[in-house]
Amino acid sequence: MKFEFTAARIAQALDGVVEGDENAKIVRVSKIEEGREGSITFLANPKYTPYIYTTNATAIVCSKSFVPDKPISSTLIRVDDPYSSFTRLLVFYQKEKENKKLKGISLRSHIHRKAKIGKNVYVGDYVSIGAHAEIGDGCKIYPNVTIYPYAKIGKNCLIHAGSIILNECEIGDNCILQPGSIVGSDGFGFAPLEDGTYMKIPQTGNVILKDNVEIGANATIDRATMGSTVVEHGTKIDNLIQIGHNCVIGSDCVIAGQSGVAGSTKMGNNCMIGGQTGIAGHLHIGNGVQCGGKSGIFADVPDNARLMGAPAFEGHEFKRTYVHFRNLNKIVKEMNDLKKQVAELQAQLGNNKKE
Image (cartoon, rainbow, N blue to C red; front, side, top):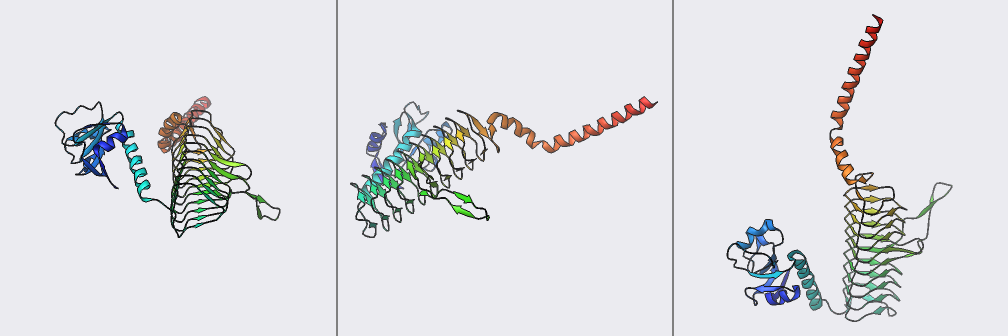
């Protein structure tokens, strides 16, 4: 990752203050322990404080409250929150790079004459855009993306290589689709017949992604049987995730990789779902729910629940129970020993009564 900015330009983007050489040139980012000339790094975790005195990084993003114990050779960019500011720096760099390099519509793309393309849109090689599809201003559509007829994409979206957006699906502003993501594939609906075969149920609905949603690589959001599968604004869905037909995922949720949500489940806002979690269909998951990785959820979940395990139950209870899980063989052996002792005592009592 390379870019060329001065420390002053970066400080301006981060609302920070430069302490040192404002004209120091930054051409790369690095870890603080691997800093070298021309790189910028950050200090957020106090555990890494010793490296600030030894790193060769040209500039360091640090807290305004940081007080060094000894001289520092690097230029400091002081901010309120180093961690979030460094994230903003990466976002700033990404936008600058895309604005400079990704422009125009490739001659190798195919855009239907009835499609509507907004202003300042980038369309890469071998992109296919169907009839009556709408692409908002400022979108970046990378090579080999397929956008079906009547799909709608809002402003300033990033659609990465190999993604597919099927017919009539709607994507809001500032959304990101990582490579290979599928929006609007058929839901898994089949009706069993008397002869033991299955008849496919047509999936006539669509998918709606609200503003600021991100869909991870090779994730799939199925279209609704009727109506819409909805992902509300600000939600982030990781790689290799399956969202079934007619699901509603609330706003500002995060769902980690390899998780699956079966059809018609409704999830509230601000939920955190750990990796490889499975959620059964037709459930209601409340607001603020947190699930540990590999959880299995088979029943409705109230607001603000903390769950672990499969089947999942309350987190603290799971941790206490898990202690016994690990000692199960020992506990069973002790129970069997106790049974033998009880049997022996009963036998002795029986003999005493006969005497």
